[in-house]
Amino acid sequence: MYLHLVSALDPAHKRVQISNDRGRVNGWTGHDRVFGIRVAVDGVPRPGAADKAAASAPANRP
Image (cartoon, rainbow, N blue to C red; front, top):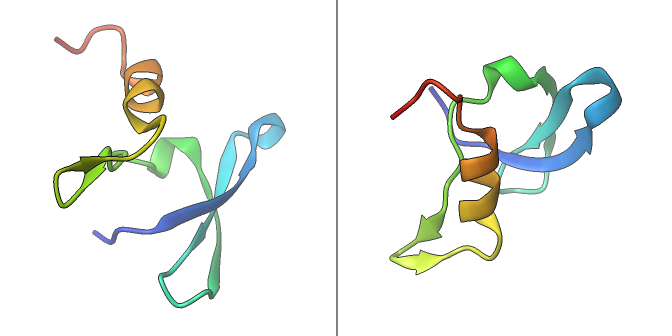
């Protein structure tokens, strides 16, 4: 498993573009391959990340 930066969104095709931390684009992957959203770095919340994580959580998850 790897942590990637989501660098672009393609909602029409339900996919995201993933990149690394050196500015290189790795390609596109489907929403079903995104397993998590980082909501904080070193204890500092990332703006808007918590809302995105809550919105993407499955309805049957506690």
